[in-house]
Each structure stands twice: as structure tokens, then as C-alpha cells.
Length: 328
Image (cartoon, helix red, strand yellow):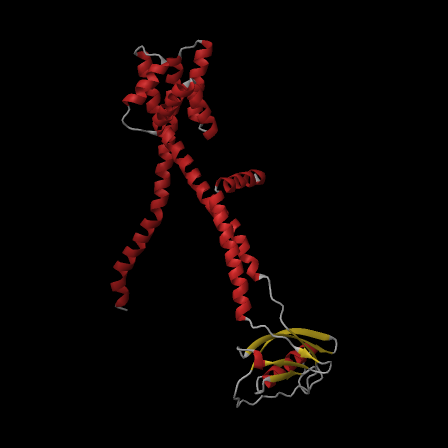
């Protein structure tokens, strides 16, 4: 099943080369847009280190806000935090210091709290050069790093596959719906078509003449009539037999009833049996199947009507019971 799906999907993509090319182009353009858009929105900067301290020069940055990764180590624990450093011209905030000596905290919680304090202190700085401490007052070792850019901008490269899969499933659903409708039309029309064929055969016409007259005189333009009409046209162009063309079509579309009809005709030709008698028996079977189809459709209609009728009943109860409830 998986191999069949892959084969059909690949064939569909090869058939829709123009759509595939446009979707691939869209994915590439979108990827470059995200890459360069993110590159512009995140200013380029670096951390200056001289062995004893680290610092950042805000003077060359138009945006006075940058994101940093900081690795905090305290005892046997280490944490990685994503922090934001802002440089503002004036600050009147006071850092709320908390006592940690008397509070039972784990090493990782102490490291996280120290990082938060350091970041608040750095946000108080007004100069263009901001020094990044390598050790906090609480003894937590800090390592400042420029965040590595993720690969999220590559996600649009998968858009062509998603687009083609969506289009393939849409066309597949349409095809399955059409096949279902064709089968329902076949079950409705084939009993009447069989009866017409039997009547014309009993009047003295041969099979080909009967089929041709049914197709020419029919005003309904139904599914079965259209199949035989196309088969007659193809038989005239390719010198093929109408019955064989219809049989091949029925096998390809898995229309068992139509395939059985043409098999009966072929068997009658090969063995010399009475075609009218066999078609009469087949007609009874077809009418029984049509009755079962009608019963199934009726049951389905009842099921579909259950929800609207239930909602109408609830609405009726609410309308009739509301005045009585409002009096209480």
C-alpha cells in the first residue's frame, strides 16, 4: 500500500511539473526571505574577551537590545539561560536583592537567581561599553556566549512537498468521489439498460445493432449509455469490438456489474447460448441490487435527518418550557 502511494504520488508530481517547479521556487524564496529577514532583525555583534573579563560595545549597534546565552556554574550544577541585555539612557530602578543564605535553595536555583540579578544590574548600565562579569558576587561562574542561530528558516524548504501532497490528496478525493458516483449511477441505470437490450434482442436485432440504437435513441445521457457510446466511437477508430472496449473499461474501474454484463455477452458468443435468457436472469439480479441500494440510501437519509430533527425538538422544548421557567 505504501509503495503504491509513493508510486502514484511520484507520477502525479511528474505530471504536474509546472506546479512542482513553482512550489519549489516559492519554498526557496521564502527560505531566503526568512534567513535574511532574521539576519537583519538580529544585529551582528561579538563579545570582547581579554582573559579576565568580557564586554559588549553598544556604540556600534543601532538596536540597543541584544540576546545572549549565559552558562552559569555553581558547585556541581550548571544551567544555560537565554537573557536579554538592554541599554537605556536613564534608569531609576533599584535592584531588589534577596537573601539566599538562610533560604534552602538548590545549586541550580542559586545559579539562576544570580544570573537574574546580574542581568538586572547590566540593564542599569548607561555606558556604551558594558562589562560582563565572569563571576557573580555569590560565587557563580558565568560564561557569556553569542546565541547560535537556529535552522528554523529551513522549514519552508518542505513547503513544496506539503503543497504537492495537498494537491494530490485533493485530486485523489475528487477521483474517489467520481468513482463512487459512477458506481451509484451504474447500479441505478444498468437494470433499465439491460431491459432495453433484451427487448431489442427479442424484436430481432443483433447485439451490436441493439446497443447502437439504445445509444442513439437515449435522451437521458446516463453513465452506462455514455460508456457504450464512447466504446462505439473508439471501435470505429481502432477497429475494435465494443464489448471488449467496455469490458476493459469496467475492469480498470472495478465495475463488477458492468464487467459481468459484457462477460455474459462474450460467453454467449463463444458458446452459442441464448443471450436473451441469460440477460433476463441478470436483469432480475440487477433489479434486486438496485432495491438494496435504494434501501441503503433511505437508511442513510434517516441517519442524516436525525441530528436536525433532534435540534428542532430541543428548540421546541425550550420555546414551550421557557415561559413556565421564567415565572419561577
